[in-house]
Length: 262
Image 1 (cartoon, one colour):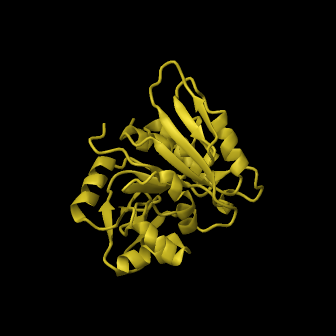
Image 2 (image 1 turned 90 degrees about the vertical axis):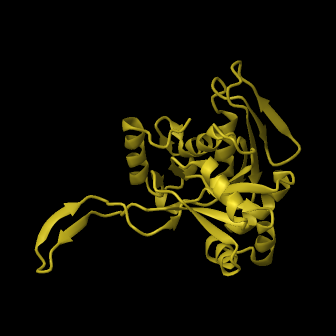
Image 3 (image 1 turned 180 degrees about the vertical axis):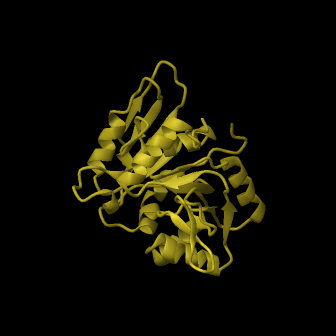
């Protein structure tokens, strides 16, 4: 599908995901959607565009993340797994349809996102640019168009802007206060960062400079220096922060699967 050069994909998946529940038994990125972990869906989106080198920043429940990939169904995947060290395990199927390369790097339990990216920089192998995204957000993002937009503007970083969906139903009310109806969880007008970010290697210098909060500090600094652009995505996008949202995504997958671009 992709006409652009393949690039590494850093997936931030070391957080605790506390809103998924208090039992601490389920890693958010491993919550099942349509029979597969949500992070698998994220990876398939990138793989559909030819970006199959994944670097995962492990932290909370790193052992569970490693176990998931060690036990991943090799009947449909052909991949090489690097456990954050020279030790490498290769998993090959007879079909060799996908050919993923997955690096699992333990970046600490409480490390902030910016520092997690810095800690996996050695696994990017000198790539001029790389994707950064979250392990719980899916959408029918046109990654080729995102890359083309990034090349055109020439700045250090691009985020993908999406319209979030309200968590609540919205009442439609006239000027006298009469309720005319309700709209269930409408799409909001404002833009948020939906992940699917593309960074030039120069962003690593900003990470070294502050190495604190990726969104509130690093991206803000990039914006201040005129080095941050937004690719506007008007299509489908959802993130998964709660089990209720996981159930909603599972229903959407079974009904229409709008983010299934592969």
